[in-house]
Image (cartoon, rainbow, N blue to C red; front, side, top):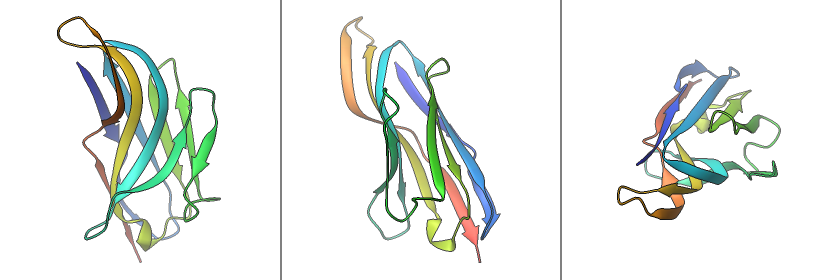
Length: 125
């Protein structure tokens, strides 16, 4: 089927940078909006940033000016460049995609909320 595989998480000091990647694979037809969400311990999952197939971006206020989302459609990959990291950015970061694919029964399918497994980002003070 389809997989979204995140990478690039880790431990970094406050003020540092990390770059997350999320690669989509499988029997893909098209990928529309891709995005990043995060969930800190004891909190709900929240939007970090999204990018449409046309390149339009949207950011949470808390990350504007520090994070940059981008995508490489040739590689079916979305990136999140995170600069000036703060301890409050600590969370599991999840990749999300709105995509069309061919399922196991060879039928065109659409999923507007396909999730990756998550990658941990920890920012120490």
